[in-house]
Amino acid sequence: MLSRRTLLMGMAASTALPAWAEAPARSPRPPVRPGFLGANVPQLSEIVARADLGGRVGFALVDLSSGGMLESLGAETPMPPASTAKVVTALYALAQLGAEYRFATQLIVTGPISNGRVRGDVVLAGGGDPTLTTDGLADLVEQMAGRGITGVDGALLVWAGALPFVEALDPTQPEWLGYNPAVSGLNLNFNRVHFAWKKVKAGYEVALEARDRRFSPPVRSARMRVVEREQPVYARDADAQAEEWSVARAALGRAGSRWLPVRRPDLYAGDVLWTLARAKGIDLPRPRVVAERPQGRNVAEVQSATLRDVLRGMLRYSTNITAEAVGMAASARLGATSHVESARKMTDWVRDAAGLSIARFVDHSGLSGASRISADEMVRVLTRLGPDANLRDLLKPVKPDPETTAGAIVGRADIRAKTGTLNFVSALAGYINGDGRDMAFAIFSGDVARRDAVPDAQKERPPGGRAWLGRARRMQQEALARWIAVYAS
Image 1 (tube, rainbow, N blue to C red):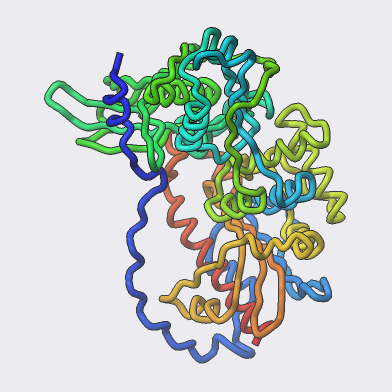
Image 2 (spheres, rainbow, N blue to C red; image 1 turned 180 degrees about the vertical axis):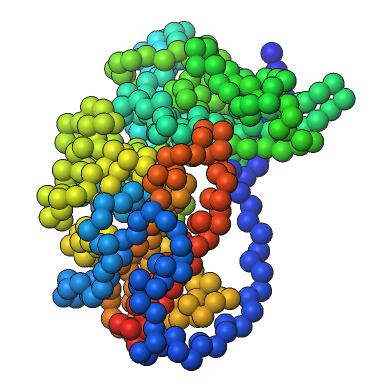
């Protein structure tokens, strides 16, 4: 058993967010080429032909004041929205839960506290918070210690039934992808575990940690083995009680790290709480998951930021688990008891609220390629529902490409939008303000047949995927430049 001092030293602070390098100094914007403006601005059909993406495209541009369509191409074609579906999810959650709603995670005791010991059980009760982190659990432990609790006579119970359990957001995608974790009523660190490795004489040292800014405790509910095989690089034993992972030795190199998804978030959160409590000198038994929420008295609680701030982070970083959690929490208000029913509730709501007929969502994040909405219907969502919810304020600015003529024009306007990316699917939807004119737009492109043909082993980095995405994004910039030049000059 590790000492308290060893545990605390082993949980040295390290950032939970990736460190981004400083942006390079930008070169001056190139002058606009004669012929791009005025009568010689390329038509949408020319822009699409130049991109040579294959598959289908959909464009729609609407005047926000009048709601009148300014320009469209393939606007009625049902397309995968990818992460632009999170725009609908944000509006849906705000409508059902309210902008000031907060998720709460609690510690409950089922008996009295006497001489520092709980004469009953301690319960970690999740409230569906998708933003709960290791440091948040540490705050719960601090509150428990502040009440003088040093141990428990009963059990450490974990309850995660506030939301339906989903083992993988999209079961058709490889299970080792960190952006495709499980979701439940108790989530931790976006339901990801940090895997790090280093080559040593005897082979590899590996570590699985619940990494956060202040604490990075070791994880016991998940284990990793280095094995000799070619494919797959990562594999999980689905029948094991704990999360039993293995990795191909040849894929590791000398050292590195990555985030792996967690499939049992209830065990993960209970495990981390146990470790943090032991490091604080609180004697707790190993956690046990229960299906029903025990009755008791709340002794500690941490809350999320307001829903509006949670949604701002979701739209900025495109966090899939946040979208699924807030979407299911919203649907729970309408009586939904499963992920499938939750997606159906959101579809029914947006169809009724915005007057749609094509839109169909199978999740809240857009991670599945099976959802559909047309460009025409997406701009209807933006124009009919977005203004009252102040959606524009939640979207991040679109950065122009400073090395292109189209980028120079895009940089003249204030564009706020949500991106969406899947293999051979790219989407962009949001608002343009140029010279005082407000417009809403949607740009969808997707080669669904090519996406469906990608084998599992190549889905993380499909051949040709990066080049296709680059062409799709250039097409988006050129379409935005056209619209600014024609309608906002």
